[in-house]
Image (cartoon, rainbow, N blue to C red; front, side):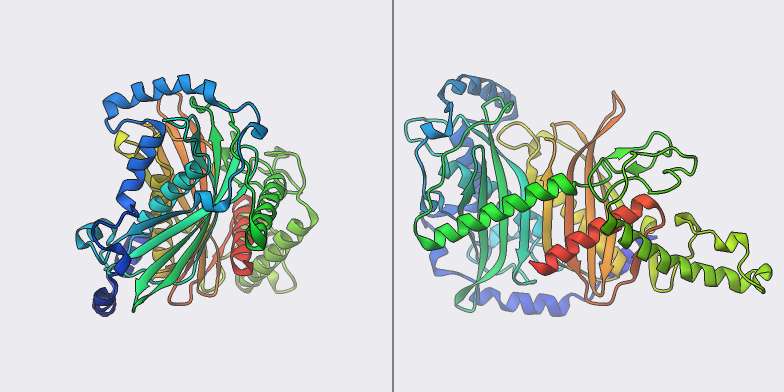
Length: 489
């Protein structure tokens, strides 16, 4: 289905866009990004991280360097009270991406349409969040940090403007805004120099967790001491976000992370909305995925949507059923998820999927000998964008990234399966969910590693997406919730 539409939308007339973007290059060179500037260059962030933890750049020596980190366990704090408090200024980091000042760097970030690859920006944000966390936990008495800091959650990425110009210099700034016992929240801002000034592009919030050198258990981090009313307000906002995430984790975790043995389709793993059908079982024979009912608000939403879709189906069936002249027959009165007809200007959810496969090579490893989280985000974003592009028939722009949860690390050599699904649409907006899992060819097992949520905006009206099964209806509700959260915040 997508091949013809995908090729059509990937060949738009890009000449006007190219001229507009290239015109900005002359005014996109920032004076503070000249050669020799002592501030950190984006290409040196990963190098700096390897120096902090003592990782090797060579794959052959990397494992030995990681095994030597085991001896650093003795330098870990036994409680958070043993560690000195830090201020937000201590973790302030500024990184430069001189796309305008250094044209040779631009090709890595350039798309065919002469725009910036947002997947590369995600990789830079992930590395920067780790560096900010190490700046907060820096101990001058140690040559190497005993902490293994990894990304746990991308809470939110809000786009302040749609266009990112490839000929203009970019600046990343960020610092720690909230700290728990073993977790750190890093807030980052991306600005771009154009027409003589920096303008905001995006705001991102990452949650990092600290582990021991062997990455087996949690480790304590330095407490945060806000200074002044502005920092105290940032800290309170961080506490509010962490409380919301904790409530959502207990009430509405990410759905569809396992496979039902009876029907071989993805089913919910738990949570408030993602339950089994309230009546008749999951398979129509009394067997249920999980015997827990839907809450009242979710039942109302499912029932309201079901009645709207099945009413159109009844009318369409009765118009061509000879036995319906005096009333609907038994067949036409049947209300079923699979018994619907597709409404006008709509697409079945099962026809709005796009899948991909990645072999995880050592080149994409992080400093802890696992697959780099930024690489996973880039691949998921590119697949989600392609799905939204094929679905909407145009080149969509990113509006927000919401709730990227890193459930399990991805080992080197894994077969990474990516599945994107358009789960909700409204007007010109497309909500895409990307599910990633690793497949073990020896045990034949699938394990979920990440769930990504992207909100895109098309340049035209997009068709409605309609669920056909109960599981798809749960995805629809989850997509609507993420879309509403993006609109509200």
